[in-house]
Length: 339
Image (tube, rainbow, N blue to C red):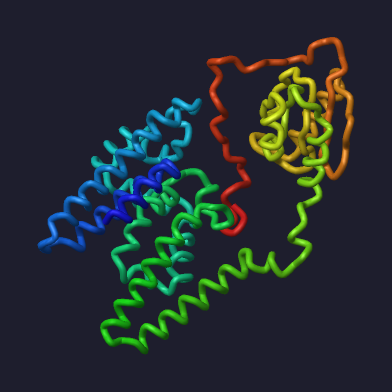
């Protein structure tokens, strides 16, 4: 229990929603200890069940906003309610809302099928799989299409739990004398999981071309090197992290900020632009209003403000400004493998 408590503490300190998984693990401990004599294990289970969600609530409600975030910024469950409190009230009044939200897009049941089939349904033979339930609910109840695809990182938090549950289920079968069945199910799950992994990413290791950065990505890095330390920059969302340690960076978003340099892709959409032509139009606008192009390669441009007149529509965000609430482009969320 000491090791589990340390792991729970580290999980709660890693990502703001993992406290929900810790709470679910507490529920699993209580389930397994039901009717048993181990009072310490039951107390431990209750502490996890209460402490994990409490840690998540503190992190989401207080710690993240204290670091500059906006309360409710990542709320993506408007089908259930405008915020967590309203969603809870709505669900208690009409539990069918959960079902409607979970199946509001064909990609959501496909996601569930993907997780079940690629593990030969083995995790469902173990209560440990319930630890993944809060993290899975985050995805299938969300109205953000980015959460439904398997092309992004969201599966990464589910798989350690599901694989552990699968191994545990095989161990129970083996210990119960059903070794032939354990071998067959284990081999099936291994083949299905490896096939899925190979199709989604392992092949990248075998193709040297895939080891190289894509041309626009490399061009962004080269253009960023041309920006001097201490400059003010409007930057493409992808390259901004390279510049924040030595320049003053604002996100390039189509609103002129009057910064000395602007670096962006103009042939490939980047957050928060909604359509591919928007960045090209913004580039043309800046070139027509006092900016000079210093770099143009592989769809990446670096502009420098050399004019004396302010750019029309310039607006600098102030201390009371809030970050962008992500708006999903209309063409996102229609492909299970691409997002």
